[in-house]
Length: 180
Image (cartoon, rainbow, N blue to C red; front, side, top):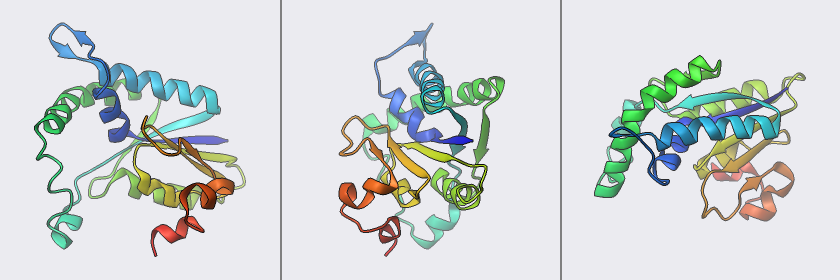
């Protein structure tokens, strides 16, 4: 079985920044693009999708108060995030209605969930491959023999990184080098 772990906030933000779509006064481009991309990648990769959502990590902020502190300084970024926040409850409901599993990290982030799931599932003999769909380069540290990283970003230096290409494409000898 193949799995597709989707970074929910990353995919939502990506589509929120695309051409505007409206239903009445409400922007819907994030919701539309989200469903379309999950379906597309799951179909192409023959993978079971699972959406991983960020929670709010008080622990990280307690340890490092400046953690992501400047992300809302840009008024355009703040407006984009607000637009996505309005659509997010609809995306959650649509994914549930479509039978797509979702996990929300209450006190962590989607990449923490991805790390836990990869460490538990990748070694399983019933798991052929895990694909990580995100715009977050931190997820590259999860690449393994049967785990690949796929970037959402149009400006990404690499759109798809698997274990065999990892050193050549990233300049790091192993995914573990991200942590060292």
